[in-house]
Image (cartoon, rainbow, N blue to C red; front, top):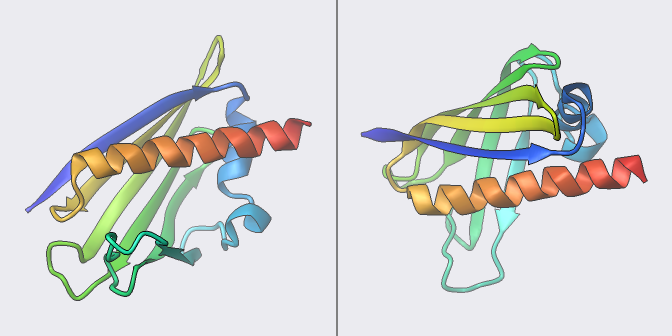
Length: 141
């Protein structure tokens, strides 16, 4: 079984600025086009966090499925893991909506492997959206 998780935040930037940050090849080391993608490896310093891929790491292969600038970005993330509760392919849809304060960014993750709790995902979304906000702040400085 899988589940769906959603995270959102408002950032002080236009949808075009947010979209550009999401596909910035230098920031994400990504080939941002349908069929393109990137490989992400996260390493945990905390020994109590084993990582989905083992050895304190998470390895994720990401492919871009659809880019509809500056409104929507769809990615498929495949988790590299021997644990069937953590392995699988999740779809991430980033929706960007202009609001008075800037842009509402909504991340919808579907087909989330059951080994990834909604609570852990909420923390990951908060961190990712915070990193996006920080990146945009640096770009504006």
